[in-house]
Image (tube, rainbow, N blue to C red):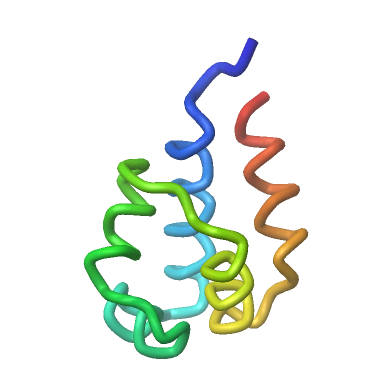
Length: 77
């Protein structure tokens, strides 16, 4: 059984990578061509990314999409 919801785990990973990249939610959203509120909702675990948005976010963060997925999986325990 998962120790935390998938959306919360992804949100934590996303925030970690965004902050590591030195980006605000707004600048990440601009780079990924997504709405800033969507990034905030992802980070709070209120939304889940589509496959397309996951790839856009990964590209904007300069990481492979599978890196974000693997980190999220490790957060789930």
